[in-house]
Length: 204
Image (cartoon, rainbow, N blue to C red; front, side):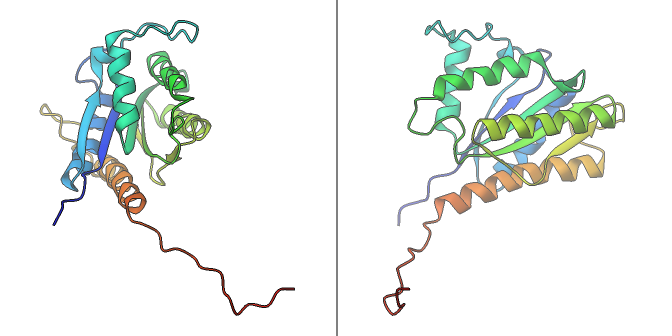
């Protein structure tokens, strides 16, 4: 009996500082997906420090090539951004701008892909506003945002020294994001029953 392919989920986010609160949050969501059988990979920290996206220049830096390779291969995505002035960081915006290179792929952008979202901020207002912005961006990229999005207030103590989430509400949100991305991947991998026309139906 052949084994089913494990869904591949890539996490993208954080800051240029390795081990940021946003990266810790992203790792928890990825771990939740991995616990349900996903293969996962992560682009975070210094890997996000990419050259400014230039659509008129086809050459891409190695980091950008790795980003695009993972996004083209993945079955699901989890994005995590800190809030900067009520929106996503310039670092994450530039990273997502590279998705424009996928506009002529067979699977355009994130078409049909489940996308989990995490926003962190030093207050609830910035986190919620940033999460709403991320949903709009994912819709523009034809992705499917998961019903649960995680909004974390990093002004509160959320993580211990080992990066484990100590706030039960935040932990629930983060794990649910990863689990819902996996649930969507499983639904997409299950063939839908064909709907045959009812031959007995009378035309009007």
